[in-house]
Amino acid sequence: MTHSKEAMQQTVTSERPDTQPHIPVFAPHIGVDTLKHLTDAFDVGWLGMGATTKDFEERIAAYLGLDNRFVVATNTGTSALHIALIAAGVGPGDEVIVPSFNYVADHQAIGYTGAHVVMCDIRDGDLGIDAAKAEELITPRTKALLPLHFSGIPCDQSGVYALAQKYGLRVIEDGCHAFGTTVAGRKIGSYGDVACFSFDPVKIITSIDGGCVIVNTIEEAQRLQRLRLLGVDKDTTERYKNSRAWEYDVVDQGFRYHLTNIMASVGVSQIKRVDEFIASRQAVCEQYSSAFAKLHGVSVLRLDYSDVSPFIYSLRVKDGRRGAFIEHLKRKNIAAGIHFMPVHKHSYFADCRRGDMSVTDAVSSEVVTLPLHSNMQAALVERVIDSVSEFFS
Image 1 (spheres, rainbow, N blue to C red):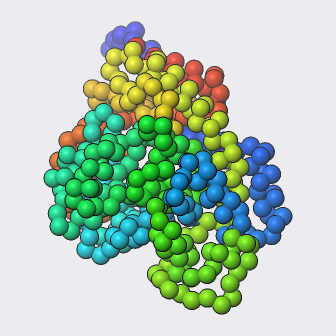
Image 2 (cartoon, helix red, strand yellow):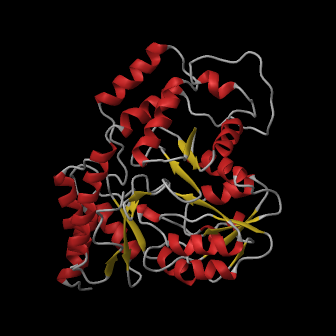
Image 3 (cartoon, one colour):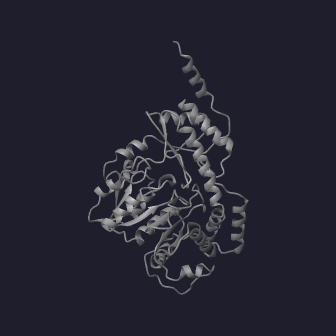
């Protein structure tokens, strides 16, 4: 049996994996400054929610440029989504319209409230919720819209808010990919209705795990403070002083969702460097897009990242070649991810009401996430570019 020279070369390549260092999809940037903040937090001796939590919230507010909007930090992004939905009035029997093209945290958080998940398709351009298709899903039970800013790229906010105004709906923006993204000069979360962010281990800034909710009124902020700490009425004020209220009332439903001083100290160290982190990521994304936009069989989401705070960098691989592409990168010792498997394909959510999913189904079969790190080494960026270009050439 004979083999072509090309086939023999492919066989040899597949049997000889690259020996260069592995490049992961995610690599949190933790330096000595973070270790110093942690040490200082331990030295204070108040490990639970306290003054450092308050400091982190104030730094978030200052960074986002909040004016008469309020930040409440939580222990995870999912916790933030859950109590944000409750504070927005979502409850048993309500419906919340959310993209299927997202991680399942949004959908689980909706379920925690007793509301029903209704899944919507996305737009081909920005991979955010399709407001026109969302309108087709609205019923008298619809209470809120929960759009995602995929990879930090803004969704159709004007379409979402026009729909919310028309039907009297709340908007809970999932900004977990978009901390620092700006729209018309304003950072996401500094305007609008409710916004949620995540500071989990792989986000642009991390507090090891954590999140926050941003709302427009002090009343909603105080409700969120009670919801994150077992419904207790006085504890937040006292704990912000590294103290406790020994006489208190439980006045609301509540959960163990508060962010500790230790986790907040990591967040404080990270937010001090957030502009540096974002700028480095923007530069890598623009290098990627500049190189990949010229290739046949692949498409990029965006060329200009000047207003985007990019959590991930994704390509769309055409012609059913995604699996082969991921294997090619694996041989080069480069990891690749898939963001996301659509939620309507998961068995637990298979029976949820949904509309046409043609764009979601197409995108989810093509999308591939490439390595993107804060302060990513130039040599690693070049390896990724060379390996991607080799496959599509």
